[in-house]
Length: 322
Image 1 (spheres, helix red, strand yellow):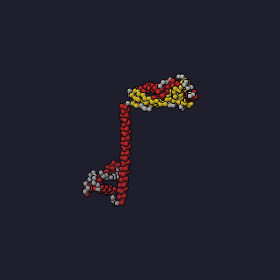
Image 2 (tube, rainbow, N blue to C red):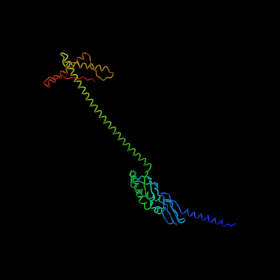
Image 3 (cartoon, rainbow, N blue to C red):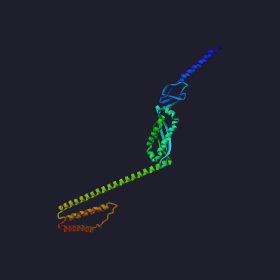
Image 4 (cartoon, helix red, strand yellow):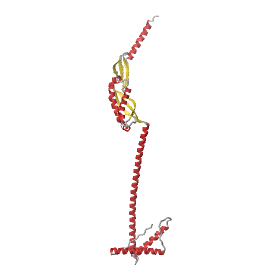
């Protein structure tokens, strides 16, 4: 049996497979927002751009496919503040490889993540120990800016650009947090107490002003009432002396006093509870009462004549009930 054709077929198949493998190994692709590092026999050759690329098979090797996207590194730093409070500071570092420094990013740094962490620790430990805990809380944004600027200046020579540096939280010890909460609660309670005291003071002042205004208006009302009573009595006495022949103002005044006296007795009798002191009111007592009123009026009239040298009008007495 002749095996020559078979051998030739096998050799041809091997050659075809070798040629195809060389062909397929000559092409490779790089994804968008990535860059490939191509070496030839262990030496840097070029940077491959996104898309289809060609290389020499078995001579050229794509040793790295570097992402040009923004990446985030979370670092948690524990340090002590100026007032001896230990605090944990979580920091989010957003960074990316600079497109024109891909060579430096790949060949100058062996472990970029660890080295970025080291720079973050260095910056934080250089800032926070100089600040108190309250100052650290107040200056979070400034610390983040300082970390970003320092990292950007340090990492730019290695082909990395720092996009943002964000301090996401400050975590002091639980006892310190509890003490801070107690201080804040006490301060707020003090403010609430002061506010309540100011409110009570305002209410008392307004109430006193209202009472003063009420008493003023009440006094004006009483004065106007008495004025109206005096004017009414004067008109009534004038009409009485004019209408009744031979009547004098003293007679009219006596009748008014008796009328008011009986009205008062009527009101006292009509209520169950009263602190009014009752005077004797028998007919003799009434006569004596009228005599006392008359004597008082005459005495006042004589005194007025002696002082002024002329006759004075008889005073008008308005009885009051108690």
